[in-house]
Image 1 (cartoon, rainbow, N blue to C red):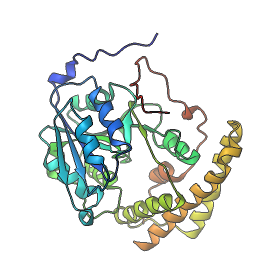
Image 2: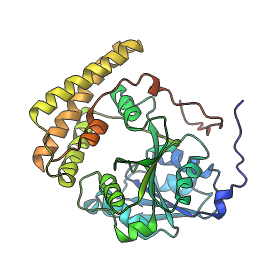
Image 3: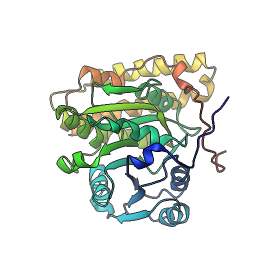
Image 4: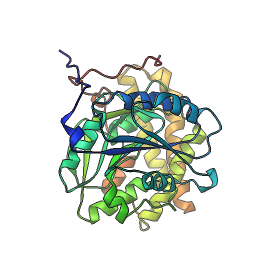
Length: 333
């Protein structure tokens, strides 16, 4: 039987306060869904929402103001010319009032009403410096991105992760640690990886919480996939300057991942619908990676596996069912 979460009070309310920092640019289609999900969380006290807007020209701000009524909403404006992921986060965290910072992309939304509770619970261990949660795609996500999400964000929680992989689309950090080490504003991406690497080296733990699950909405084009992986590779080269990504790596990893995706699609009887997107997605992913490395580096073996190597994940495409009713979003098709 599915358990209904008590939305009236939660024992963590008295223990934690959190500021939810959301980076946004032209997100009128998505921001309302995220904020409605935040409004329905089991944690009810000592929460604020900080929207860092980098010059939206659509109705992002109007939708945010109309939707966010449960908790205080603060809007921080930055100019588009100033934007990097690290810069936007630093400006948002500067405005934060609470000891824990939850970071969410404007185009994600939580599945369950205990998302915040699950994401923040590991901070009861004072050694934990960073927590991140599971991500899954939706009906607009490309087949290969579903595979990537399942590879990067497994079904098993890990309270003592040994490597610095994380993702700031769905994460939380201690504000006190950010005060010691702000996000790197010069990186083209992977500011989360750089911060996690620092936290591990400083003796803090990273926790991965599978139950803190969100849907990450991407409507990718070939150019969009290429640009994302190119900028991330440029940042990766900065962080690990002794690593390399050769033309041989491009061909080998592209073919290996395409083959893995096609095999999985055949097993799922969805090859005809996904054949084209699998080929162009993986081609743009690894061509962007190759170009990024050569425009700007060392991949550790563990991170190379995390970022690039395919793995059979047929079971991973379906999330483990939880005894908690999911949030109902009436705008979903």
